[in-house]
Image (cartoon, rainbow, N blue to C red):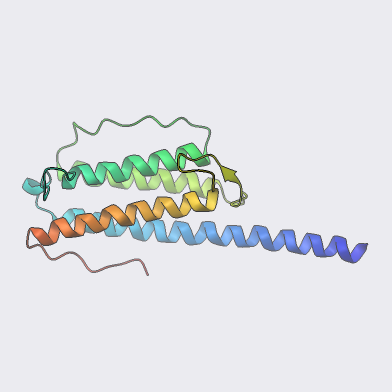
Length: 169
């Protein structure tokens, strides 16, 4: 019986350690993601922030605000008890202010995730696309940023602007 109890304690301890490693890895990748997005936005001239390649696409600026709103929604809805309230970004027009907003949004989401160190990432939550684990929500947060950041790189290329080198290894 003592051996079984010891085994349970060891397995549970390993589970907590593994989840903490996931949290730490996410935070490191999140910081790299923020830096890379900031570098991309710095490359686009201010007069091109409203650029969109086709009518059905979001503008460069709208892509950024979409990224920020999504990270706020996912981090608040699934890692806090806060209700997400969509922010009206229409008054933010200067690149300097957009860069500040990126910093603030990434840092808020990071703080929320760091505060959840040790949580059960296998916990299922209701999601509009069906039940997901909290680990899947973390992956979705990063994947969504990557998806739209990739579109921003295309926007730079369509304007003959060399995108910054990838960071985030």
